[in-house]
Image (spheres, rainbow, N blue to C red):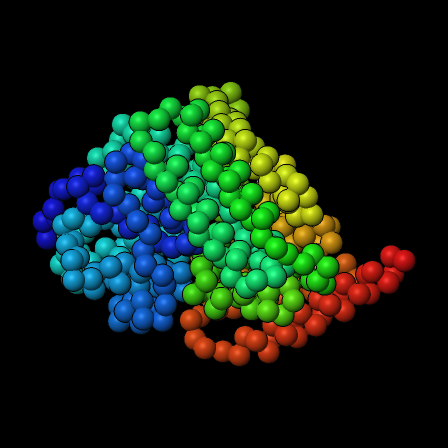
Length: 419
Ligand code: SF4
């Protein structure tokens, strides 16, 4: 079928909700270069059921949820495929992530016969006609991801202590809107925009600090690792964060920026492996990392005091080195290594336990689950548990209650033995 050639700027671009705040901030980054972008609607069982009509059973949960989000857009009365685009990056490799795009193309182009566009910030289609502004988008997009991560973390460490239920969520929503409106500013220099975003984050920080809280409430800090989509997408993980909070926990989650930093570090390692230490590619890679770290530092320094009890590594290699005795980066790859290393990071920082969120059948969870018992033994029964998700209703609360009980015992025992 002949696809329509309308460029991206004449379409509405929808961004899948890996996390709602991440998608909202990324959509704002696209708006800053003149692309009308929005997050896909909230994922739910309806969007999942829409996707199921086209699934063979081999797909992982994030793949189905992403497709369902696009199909939900296609249900809207004003849906015009020729004026619609979906953000859908792809990759090579054994993970099913490389299968998302062919599946979506098959469903929309071949089965439904629609000229909808699929694009990605790393696209080889000239970025859907935004080639000149691609660099600006990449930098703004990075800042958008970092801002979304910071806002999420602020919400997660405030909400468990709020005295009036709902105030943290309200502060979060107002702040997200504020941040998105700054990210979406057009024709502003890169430096001015960074400072404006830092100001918006300061306002957000103050908003959270003004919420009445009771810090004397006893809480168990629970580290969250696992598959990146499932751990951030509330529908996919069955609203695990709020369930943990209801059982007296604080969620400390591995964020999205951490994953991006890992992929850039992997790029550097690859260049070294191929003897390209002194090459233009290496120079480009180093420059990119320096710019990313600079922007991240400017934005995250606003939260230093608030996050003092929840520190993040200065460099992603600290996490990879912690993983080394169990899953060395040279022998294993991707999320399983990051989950392993971050679990050890959390253990060192004194959390009561770690939950690894995994879509059912995803190899990351299967491999980490095989290694965690050794980690747990090495650290006096440190509670680590993989929770699998497949969009089916199961009795998550029972399992979670047992895990929180174990975490409480571990924390109490540790306190008693430390005097
Ligand atoms: S990591 Fe697992 S769940 Fe995520 S896309 Fe790959 S196969 Fe699917």
